[in-house]
Length: 568
Image (cartoon, one colour):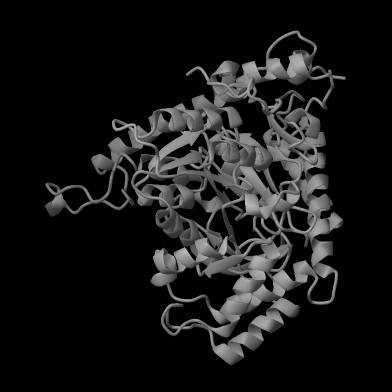
């Protein structure tokens, strides 16, 4: 078997390296993994993945926890930095030509008579957008002409000014395989029981409610939907909102404020970050999915209290996601809950991508690990992915929900959810629960799990570097260099496959990637076709970087000896 950093450590040869050449001890890997070696019997994992057994965490995990994050090849990292350096140099050159009107300037800028005003457009902050993003802008914002199913129709667009503006030719690209939409369970469709129910609701209630829930916009279907959501999640009560982003950004300020502490994962979604900032709470960030980093912050918060006064924090709120949409990683929820209980903190869990997509019953990451929903204080999720609808929810104890009904800005001031959207949620959720009298929902959950494992396995076998958990339907494939983001998307679209490319600043500067989203609607033939094309384009663009050596995730026992302070 090929020897990886993980197996070398178990054999006592050397400590693991972490990606980009950072020292292992800086994120707490070295100490914890040494203790893992001292206390556990030797075991060997596949060189591409790390497996956490239940016994290795004091019985916290009821199933193997397998994630892979392969180290960035040094040569690739060097060339990626060089690419950004060259683009930056040419960007400054083009800005110089634009300043002297040698090159036409298409960017938004102040009028000449307003040159002495405070700038409305931050010229330097837009440097990346106008000089780097603009070169590959054609890879995004393509109009769809159909439902975002397993296949979709795209409207062809062309540009005559290097992606500053686009023109539509009127030609429709039909049957493009869709590997970019969040349609995890395939409910985003225009046929079937969900579409029929939504149409009936439109005929009965109309499209809009034209009022807030607290005035005259509270329909009987709103009440039924919230009871169904609470039953689905296994909690006492739930409330729904018309926008998923606002569910986070408007409810966190209602739960936390001045004198409170928010501990946020460094890769949390922008809606969580915005909500934390709007709350006025003190925010401290812990390293992604790193329980040692989280516990260090918890200990410091308990010991030192608030800055200057050293008074105890009014409350400590841990904010994490179920599936991280850029990494494809799954939160280490059993460990987070154990730490939360140990230090008497509160837990806010965002299940936007995991609800419906994880767990044997599609109940999300709590179901995936077989945990008690009551151990999560605030359960949040959206209906925009697995349910093929719109909006979000907050669920938990009845007292929590009653408090939010009168204190949440999104509950008090926002217009009620649209009736056809409600009906889509109710019908799809009943289908997943089996309350429609069929097994279609259960079969879709199982099919998504099979498709995810198959797709990830095949990509790794081809030699691509894949990030994330084996059960995550979000599959990031590393591209690294900025030019390859656009090249990969264009070459895939030429072969009738639509993909999403992601780069800086949404990811670290040298970790640009293509992000595939797997759906239960994908058949094996569709996946095989897509995989064949991905392999072909991967050979063309030389994207098969894998050296079969991955950086192991944090595998360690859950005890007081391991969870100690991290040296900064």
